[in-house]
Length: 121
Image 1 (spheres, rainbow, N blue to C red):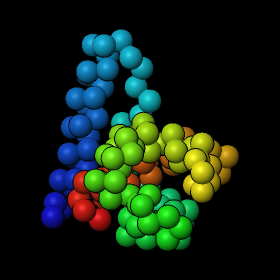
Image 2 (image 1 turned 45 degrees about the horizontal axis):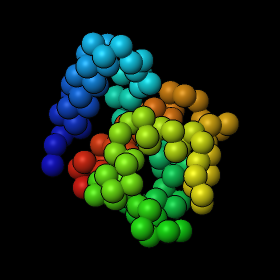
Image 3 (image 1 turned 180 degrees about the vertical axis):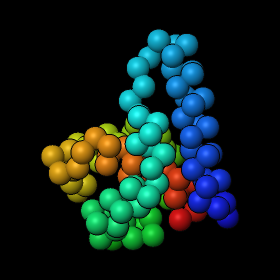
């Protein structure tokens, strides 16, 4: 398991590459690198708003809609943008948090969820 600083640097590097690729393609970047790499804030947001249903990356409402990497990939939810969108707008049983969380908090929790999924929760 990676240490927190290594995980932070890995995410920052991925965002840097994504930013460079999106600039060369002329597509705007939805994720703020500073907000997305703030795993500490993402952890806090997750614990307060998400862990009730998604403890340890699971899902107590719909088991098949968990936050494990394989499931995120299957449902095309394995990107910061996709996770941030569902946190913001909700979907089916998933409540929308766009009116309760700031854009920075949403980006931070999206980064945290993706990082945890990649680490195997």
